[in-house]
Amino acid sequence: MKIAFIGAGRLVQALAPAFHQAGFEVAAIAARSLVPAESILRTIDGCQIGVSAQQAADMADLVFIAVSDAAIADVAGQIAWRPGQSVVHCSGATEVSALGAAAAQGAVIGGFHPLQLFADPVVALRCMAGSSVAIEAEGALQASLQQLAQAVGYRVIELPAGARGRYHCATNYGASFLLSLLREACDLWNSFGVSDAQALAALLPLARGTLETAQAKGLAGAIAGPISRGDADVVALHMRELMALNADNIHLYREVSLRLLRLAKEQGRLDAETLARLEATILAGR
Ligand SMILES: NC(=O)c1ccc[n+]([C@@H]2O[C@H](COP(=O)([O-])OP(=O)(O)OC[C@H]3O[C@@H](n4cnc5c(N)ncnc54)[C@H](OP(=O)(O)O)[C@@H]3O)[C@@H](O)[C@H]2O)c1
Image: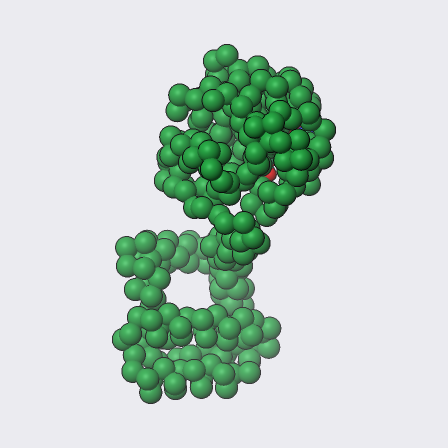
């Protein structure tokens, strides 16, 4: 299986060397301008770097279109594809149908979205094993992508057609939304003179501990704090404080607390009466 990449950005600078190191043949990397981090890509023996997109596609059985999301459909539409050739993109939010021009010429299309940050190729390569990739493909292409994923140490999430919007939305909850919750916490501490740096020095270990406990004991097993203890008085205190500050995050606090209550129910430590009292307290803080 000869592999080619179209695009030479952050993702390719890690994924192409990873495939090569895992023993796969990376035949070509197409770039429309000067190749950044060319020295990294030059370590791939026998790989033609900086060829045109058409030349790269002609040299490969499996082509990764790894350009900016908005350019995927255009790039796919500018290439003459061979029937039976495989073409995938690496975007999380873009539908596989963006490769429709390739499918119309008989190519087999799919998606290969690594759940990883590729800001630094060296770090991304180091963190690849144990990270995950979402694969949307069928038949022989799915088998090939699974083989590639496993060879570089990715865990595989199979993405059925039609689930991509929900899949990508969930990644926000698992990553960036955590940051917005920490922002809320810092803002509250800022209000009595604690700086962001001091706040994060205290809160990040707390967050790490929570995530590590969740890894060991599951989400419901990791909850801590007043809701997990059934302490409605402390929840009421939090809500009074937020209202006194005229903080607009009372809505956020209420919604997140109601979701946390579901986890407390799942954990099974609190009786029905305590759960009902907690729910009434949270809803009363409107
Ligand atoms: N970065 C991440 O953390 C990450 C994680 C998971 C998935 N992905 C996905 O991986 C794909 C690539 O992302 P990236 O972060 O590697 O992007 P990037 O660093 O911004 O690089 C994009 C590459 O695409 C090329 N390109 C853009 N528009 C093009 C066009 N119209 N024709 C030809 N080439 C074009 C760029 O060339 P120029 O340099 O000439 O502009 C560059 O080589 C995207 O689908 C992204 O969603 C990224």
